[in-house]
Image 1: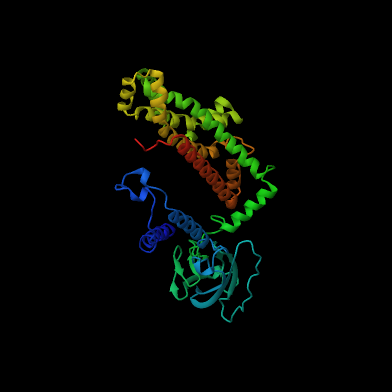
Image 2 (image 1 turned 135 degrees about the horizontal axis):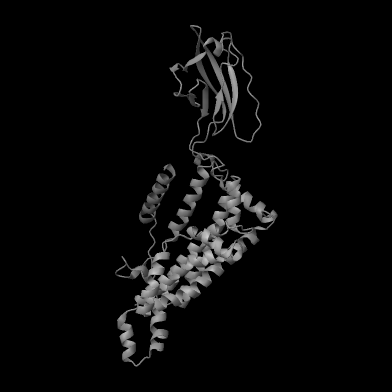
Length: 420
């Protein structure tokens, strides 16, 4: 929630700064249009906003993971590291005594020694222990006291504040709680930074990317993993488009086809591809065929609906104009319906490609030996979060690159989009 609020604040501040401080008089045709609100052709991505957005996400990621790639003053408060102390008050046989506990908090993975402390003069002796950052640990303060549990030993206060089983006391170094059996539990302050096992810093992900690029992962290079995923997505998408587009045209042009296939398409459209995995395994096995069929089904219904929508959206005035000029049905199909439906089809293709990329992880759950999705799933089992994030970023970058190529293809092949 804190990260979202900071990101929202950066968004608002950047918008205000760009609007009030950056005064650049645009001279292009779009800026000179009289009406821009609601006109899609007048809305283009603001490059400054794109750069600031990406930098903001990177800075938030770095700040909340303690990354060395950004200055320390940008870091969010991190976990407590060092020697923490608190005093407990013990009661046994009607007597009370105080002792101090020293806990050395260390980064997980480091080798540290238990701090040496003077036991003190009373019957309650000083204690020491170690606890990893972002962790917690039980501390048996009675184990070295002269009066133990057989004498009714019980901790009744921490730093002068009363405590009882199930309760806790907040100290300068973290929280001291008490278990139902009366044992103290120390949980050092975690700060705002994420533990590396949940979210590693950017440099850890980059290091892992370089390592896997050089050495590979599970007997395959990184490029083989990405190549297999890309191949599966492209084959599934292309086959889905080859079947879905003609089906959509038939549904848009024929009442019979619309009535016959509309229930099937509308029934299958909301069914997530993940729900189809068991059936795909039963029908097609666990080989490549099953994975491609799953991606084919992910793209099929989207492309069919996009083509149907494109045909239905053709202005009837254009069809009447073509008929009045003596055009045949074939000419109307070629020169009116197909060109005017292509924008919708390209939009559907972009959506279908995104869904296929999102489904490839699920498709590669089915006994895949290579693929970006396989990498992510195997790494998640061993809590290798850096590999998981690396795979997600690579899938996103490749998907974004494909989307850019599809936009350029749409611009080149459908230059009349938005021109009426």
